[in-house]
Length: 342
Image 1: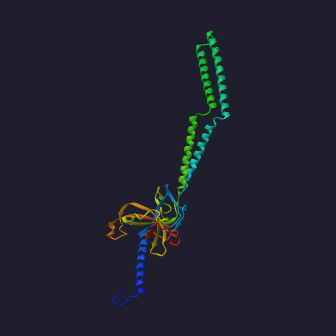
Image 2: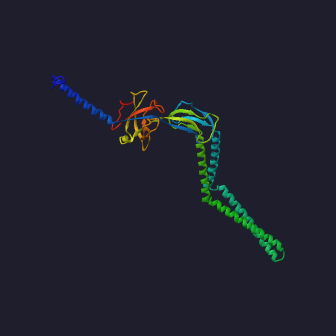
Image 3: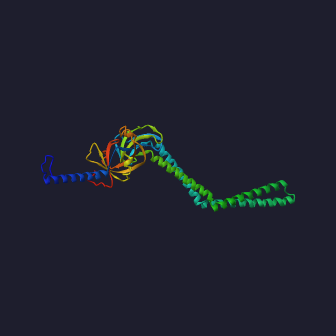
């Protein structure tokens, strides 16, 4: 083989050229295959924020944290004046005790002393009736012999009837004493007791709600209220930025939508430390298309329809900040190892 000058080329040079051509082709197809397994998207860090308020109304007594403070789940962030809530609890405790005593009385029934008192009353009324009956009999005999007037007989008759009625009343009262309380009365007392317990439980919950607790780990972004302020139910007093989870909000075109699936591994890069990616995975994939947000793409690309995705990032050291721009590489059919990420 001759070159353009007419000289014969060395076989070694020809072989070298062939090797370079084959190697270049292999490298091209290999890098293309690797590239095909990756999908690069751009987005921003999206950290959830929560506006925290009391579930009860009251006067703020203490605000325990300042802006920028780190809080843990369950920390007491703020407290209301507990005095009115504690009074409600104490009052309802007394009412529950009274309702319980009343129910115990109905379940236990009448005491033996009360039954004995009813028996004694029956005996007394029986003696009164027996005496009135004897007087009536004598008045009747005297009336028949004209030794007593008709008025005296009528008076004796009325007295005997009255004594008989009192005796019957005492006998019925004794019968009720022995039978005990009605089932309806017992059920009513039991219902009243349960209702008072429910009211006490609600008052205790309101007392607990006078303290505002952190729902998750986070950082105080805004301290909205100060001690002494009267706040209605639900009025925000703090804004809390949650440290976990941290999301990346990004968008993909329709042509790349089929390459995504929930759980897909991702490496998230920041401009601050481009050589130290964060490990993440695809979570939410929007089923609806939308126009590209204006703060992400150029004017020409804003008219394109894209799909919003959410990448959940493992940011244990808390280095990502709200709104920070990032680049995410989505790895198709590839699992991350510890050497690839933090």
